[in-house]
Length: 240
View 1: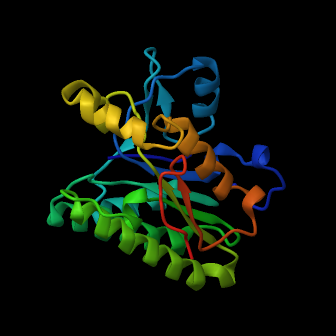
View 2: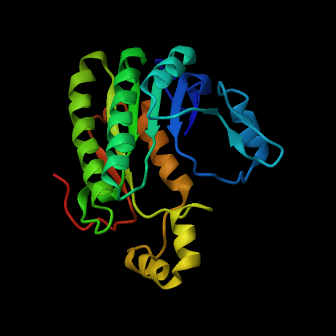
């Protein structure tokens, strides 16, 4: 897994200094569309860099190694925003519990001890938390458990002004990712997923990232304990 140090009391999202953000991410690779902007951003993100090929890099460590995660956070310094985006994307119960549940709960617990008062913690979940996922029952069940955990964490930390929210993406096309492989190996299944979305397409990574950036920013300062579905209207049920 790759970790990146990606603010304190600021007025606008653009005021957020990048060095005061902390992001945990899995190995999704993204091609830079504007390398100059990415390079400029990474110059202000502690522990990040961009290679000549436009590949963003950060600190690599095992997300399930609780001690290593705690030591990494100690080295980050002060931060005001943390985004947890680590997932096994597996139907295996042990993998889902170990990565999606235990390691993420530990990460958020460790973050909550270090994050500045008035900060924001955002967990990247999945629409699978609220729908049946045949073949990936473990993945869906653990994502649902994390939504519950995040809601409890939001109530626990609100006295410090810390907001905790969930962003639940729908099917998202990432180059080299899950749906890219499905498109190549099972094009009919891929087209069925596209046709099944009310918008007639899959999400782009930046569409998920923009919502996560907004909900983590001062622009969403009155939002806490929420689970935002970013799925093009694909989730059929009404949230309560």
